[in-house]
Amino acid sequence: MAPTVATPISESSNITDLVVTNGNGVKGLSEMGLKTLPKQYIQPVEERITVSNILPQESIPIIDMSNWDELKVSESICDAAEKCGFFQIINHGVPIEVLENVKDATHRFFNLPAEEKRKFSKENSPSNSVRFGTSFSPEAEKALEWKDYLSLFYVSEDEASALWPSACKDQVLEYMRGSEPVIQRLLEALMKRINVKEIDETKESLLMGSKRINLNYYPICPNPELTVGVGRHSDVSTLTILLQDNIGGLYVRGNNDSWVHVPPVSGSLVINVGDALQIISNGRYKSIEHRVAASGSKNRISVPIFVNPRPCDMIGPFSEVLARGEKALYKQVLYSDYVKHFFRKAHDGKNTIEFAKI
Ligand SMILES: COc1cc(/C=C/C(=O)SCCNC(=O)CCNC(=O)[C@H](O)C(C)(C)COP(=O)(O)OP(=O)(O)OC[C@H]2O[C@@H](n3cnc4c(N)ncnc43)[C@H](O)[C@@H]2OP(=O)(O)O)ccc1O
Ligand SMILES: O=C(O)CCC(=O)C(=O)O
Ligand SMILES: [Fe+2]
Image (cartoon, rainbow, N blue to C red):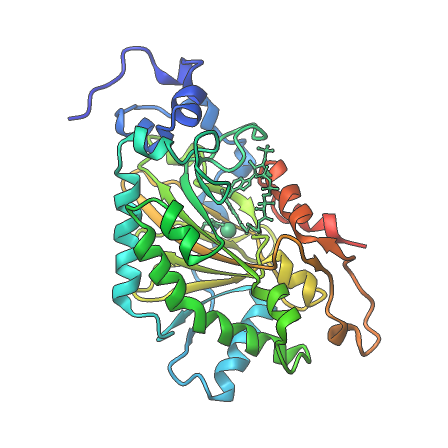
């Protein structure tokens, strides 16, 4: 049995040192066998995830991509992106083995000793494109989130081979390669509906010029009802392709104050519209708030690929969308400014996009 700590860790002023600075993460905290949640993780009541505002009868669409060429498949994708901003895809063509391998690689990385993972912390990492961290923006948050992550910004295969952690790099790269055709197809379908007939070089850069993959680890939490794995946010990507394991805990904003669970479906990928696509489509496609509950009994992992514009791109509504006289809702913003604005503050739901509103 795991030992209990003599001084309640919740009273320790060194929690930030232990988790954030020393690289133990919340995984290290969880494995100390603590019985109560440290106060730093207690979320305000309104941010906690309670059964009272979950709609069990609601769900997001599940789209079968096996007959990709059929019009009804692309129609379903565009409808889901307009109405829900979130959907799951099955028979998408990424081999199950590739998905299983990346999940195993995620566990392998997080099971490394703290001193190995610490080599990739913001202070120690050999590159800005590789970062091991915890919570979201610990310096900016009033309450921390119960999550550790490894974030990998893709620059090139060579850079990834040289600098990404060897515990996971091959499997992560294989997953990124395998998901490429899915990303292309989804974006082609979504663009057709907004009158963009061809994705030329400029548009390719704006839609998918950079990619970031995060490996998320949510360890068992002593009081899951008092905290969150990830707080309410929308992604700042164009599209996010999310692989989750079989534990569950991802919730998407439904109508009004309600939340809808995204159940694990074996072999599926969860797709969501990010802020960049909401801006590019002048609000036609919606980036929807989502959040993750902490679990009291299981360690959970997820692996989102954030498909983004390049940091140096200016983004704004595409001219094709405005061609029929539609009024622009968003101004042109430098994408890296937008992302920095996102990371500068704690998660705060759909407020990030205000930065780009006219
Ligand atoms: C971590 O938990 C998360 C993450 C998310 C992410 C959702 C997304 O949609 S990620 C898509 C992000 N888009 C990109 O990566 C686009 C391309 N990248 C960039 O434009 C730049 O790399 C940059 C992210 C803007 C960083 O620019 P740079 O000029 O190099 O400046 P820095 O000083 O390195 O960073 C600025 C500021 O942001 C913080 N930060 C940077 N990268 C990350 C990261 N991967 N994770 C967390 N925080 C990051 C960094 O700490 C800096 O803040 P300081 O206070 O230290 O100045 C969704 C949900 C989650 O829970
Ligand atoms: O873990 C999940 O299911 C979702 C994580 C998430 O929303 C994110 O990393 O942006
Ligand atoms: Fe997200």
